[in-house]
Every structure is written in C-alpha cells, then in structure tokens.
Image (tube, rainbow, N blue to C red; front, side, top):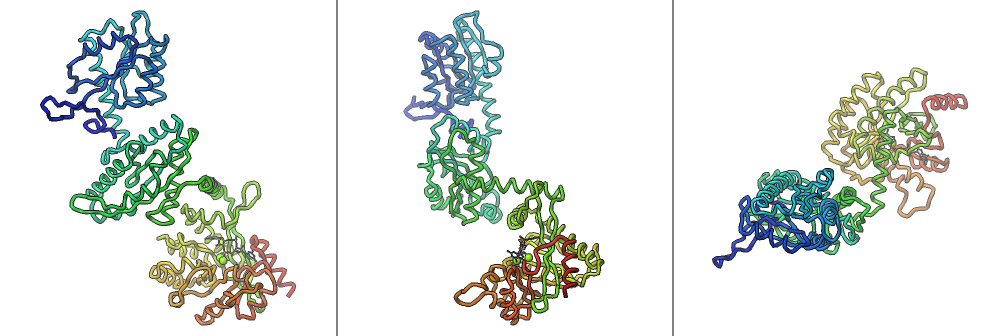
Length: 586
Ligand code: C2E
Ligand code: MG
Ligand code: MG
C-alpha cells in the first residue's frame, strides 16, 4: 500500500507530447482563510522541483473544509496551516485532528500566522509534531522553498522508516503492526457495526515451500497478495500478518467468507507454473468501537483455529461463546500451573478386585486437583488442557513416580502384592524420553516391573500402528503390563487389536451403566468380554456401582472390576485402612 517509489504516491499526468507519462509528485495542502495567501504560496513555488519531484497543491479555506478534504485525500506530504481562521485557535485544533483523529503521523505541518507576536506553546509544537513555525511575511520564494524542502526531506525519511517498521517487504502490504494501527483507527472512527475482520491462512504453505523452494513460495505469496488486493478493492484493509496469513478488515458485505475463499478457486500463476492452493478463514463480525484491533484479531484467530480443526479450506465466524470458552481455559491453565508449583495436585488410589472372590488385585492411580478454597477440579476438565499445553508430560511423569513410590510403601506396610495401574496420555507416550523416564522410575523406586501397569486409551492404541507396536513391545520387555482403557469407545479393528502386545481390556463405564438397561443389539460389555476371551486377554470393568452390574459381569465371564460398589478412589492412608478393614471382615 505504501511503497515510496511506486503505487501509493500520487502521480501527475504529464501529456506534454501526447504520451501520458505518470510522474510522482509531492502533495502540499494549503489551509488558510485568506485567498491571497493561497495565491502567494502557489506562485512562490510554481514550477519548482524539490527532491526530484514537482509539487501538487490542495486548497482549503477553513479548518472545516480541510477536515473534510483530509477524510478523502491521501498521501499529503506537507500541510501549510494558518493558525487563526474561523476561530482564534482553529489551526491548532486542526493539528490535533490531523494527528489524533486521523492519525496522520507522517504528514509534516508548517504553521503560519499573520500576527508576528503570536506563537504556540513549545509543548504544542512538540506534542503535535509540528515541523516549523513561520510568519506570513516569510512567504518569499527562497524562504518558502527552504522550509518546504526541509519538511519534504523529513517526510521522506519518516516514510522510509515507517515502511521498514510497518510494511511487509515481500508483498508491499501493511504488516501486523500497521494492520493493528489501521484497524484501531477505523474502529475508533466509529460506524464499524457492519465491518468484519478476517484472517486468511494458506493451507499447507510450508509443504509448498519445502517442495518448491522458498523463492517459489515467495512468488506464490505475492501472487496471492496481488489477487486479494485487486479483488477486494480499496474498501478493504489488507495486510500480511504472518508467513502465510493475511488479515482483512472491511465491510462484511464485501468480505463474505465464501466470496473470499472463492478467490482461491482459480490457480495462481507463479512464473511458468499454475499453482492451486486453498485457504482457511476465520472471521469476526459486529465490531464496535470498544473492542481494539488486537482483540478483534485475536477473535478472528480463534475462529481460524476452529476452522482449521474442522477442515482445511473452510471458514468459521467467531461467536462470543468461543471466546469465553477459551478465556476460561486460559485461566484454568494458569491456575493449573500455579497448582503444580504449589503442589496442590495429589494422587488417589481406587481398588480393583476379582469379580468372583472380591479379592483385591490392584489399584488405579488417579490424579486430583484441590483448589485453595477446597473445591476440586475434575480431571476430565484439566487433563485435556494439560495435554493441549504439553504440561501433561511433567504431570504424568510425576504421577508415575508418585504411584511407584506409593506401591513400595504399601508393600512395606505388609499389604498383599498389588498391581499399580497408571494412566498414560498420548503425548507422554509419544515423548522421546518416555521409555527412559519409565526405566528410571522403576530403578529409583525399586518396584517390581511386573506390578506396574500402564493404561492407554483405545484411540491412542489404534493410532500409528508401527510406532505403537514398537513402543508397546519395549514396555512389555521391561515386564510392565498394558491395559486398554475406555475400551469400546474407539474404533478398534480386530486385526489391529490382535497384533498389539496387551494384557487387559478395560470396559468403559458407559457400557457398565448400559448393563442395567434394555438395549437393542446386545450389550457392548458382553461383546468386549467375548472379544477378550478370543484374544486371551483379561477383562476389567470400571464404574461398577451396583451389585446387579457386578453379578451380570460375572455371569458374562468378566474377570475383574473397579467402582464405587467396592471403593471410591482413596488417599493412600484411607486405602491402607480399607484393606485392613476388609481383611477383618473376611
Ligand atoms: P479413567 O482412567 O477411565 O478413570 C476412571 C474414572 O472413573 C475415574 O474418574 C474414576 O474416579 C471414575 N470412577 C471409578 N469408579 C466409578 C464409579 O463407580 N462410578 C462413577 N461414576 N465413576 C467412577 P476420574 O478420577 O474423574 O478420572 C477421569 C479421567 O481422567 C480418567 O478416566 C483418566 O482418563 C483421566 N486421568 C485421571 N488421572 C490421570 C492421570 O494421572 N494421568 C492421565 N493421563 N489421565 C488421568
Ligand atoms: Mg484409567
Ligand atoms: Mg476408563
């Protein structure tokens, strides 16, 4: 949008010899209520070239008229401004309008006054970045020429600096900072209820870059920028805010998501290649003056993330519920971080029993988070968050060590040999250090690996067959057993399941609940138990709350069970008491 050498400048048609040659000019605006001053100024500067360019004049005869012109006109380099016009301070007020309301920070302002004695405060000159202050008697050609030249030189320098700071060199579009400035200005000017802000992200751009080289990638970006610019028109502010992302702000009617995405339908001509790319779009609408550009862009980005999650090449329009959702998650994540530091996380242990004899065979370690006010945050809420943020790696490692340590303590207290089940998240499992951490947890606590079991969910188990097989085999080589948690909720293929080196299937709580209901097509729990029998795997049912369920499961041939019917997850000492109490009653 602003390239000192080319498009953003204004050009003068110079068709002296019949050929229209466009020549860059400097635009000067003369604001004065005395027509004589206008005449004298243009006369004094007529025909001169300054820093290689001719001058073009704009004339306003009051502050009011000037304000209206400034709304429409662009690229004014210098304003020659009369101080006293409609009112004593009309000129100074106008300076404020130029700098604060229009945010025209580049334009150089030369104040002029008829009264030699009058001068604005030094602070005013400083605060509003007024370039020069002259009396009208200094309107001679030489003096004016020198003043305007100095102002233009300053203007050019400011523009060059701005260009570096605010424009993307590749696409010549505004960058992120400039976009935020422009967006803020537009929002503050009001009447933006029908405006929208969108982020357009080119799909798989890094793959294109890798496959065809950066140069070709750059050309593609230029080509995309060019098309967006020409098709969306001057009403839309267009910026490149990231490697392969563009931001747009303009009337929602011009920026209909479907329309913007359809601009990608035609291939892009990149040198000799015709390249087909798609883009994904996130948008926020119904903007208002009290939302800043930064926040609006954030909202558009939230929508973009959703769109990417759904499907590349699609779009999502932001709704406030998305934001509160995310803000809530961000807050929760911060609290979780503090909770980890303040050691407000702890582990509880839920017994697992043989369904026939009700003899205790193991415990499952389950994490708990107690807030400072004593309330609990359920793991179903914070575990996904810890997973998304990567914190689960550290938390999971801590649970593992804690559980091993506790197992050792239980043994020291003379409890029967138990199996300790620990839940392992996808992300932990995939972490390159996982095996090493597992081994050092075993070593440091000195437990028998045969007493340790890892629970992974069915969905994790079914992903990336080769990787899974290898890792599961390594775990089993250590002597550790493996259970598939929440079984029945994923989509295991039997052939895949058959290959996996696993020990136990854990029937999801939902299917235990279902046992006491009439369902068509048979109970899933029954199918899982049957599957376990075929694959020679032990089956454990979780979430058993009623004797009726236990009985049914027993009849179906389920081996083990866990649930409130036997015990809730317990603190270590409570668990020790629970074991002792059962021994007595037997
Ligand atoms: P999960 O591994 O399937 O754990 C079983 C859940 O069922 C636990 O919920 C347990 O408290 C609950 N439960 C057990 N018996 C009953 C019952 O009879 N009735 C009912 N209604 N619920 C019962 P919890 O502790 O809220 O944990 C939820 C999930 O959070 C776990 O599901 C597991 O996926 C995850 N989780 C818990 N601790 C950890 C951990 O240390 N690491 C990882 N990665 N995930 C964990
Ligand atoms: Mg579990
Ligand atoms: Mg489960």
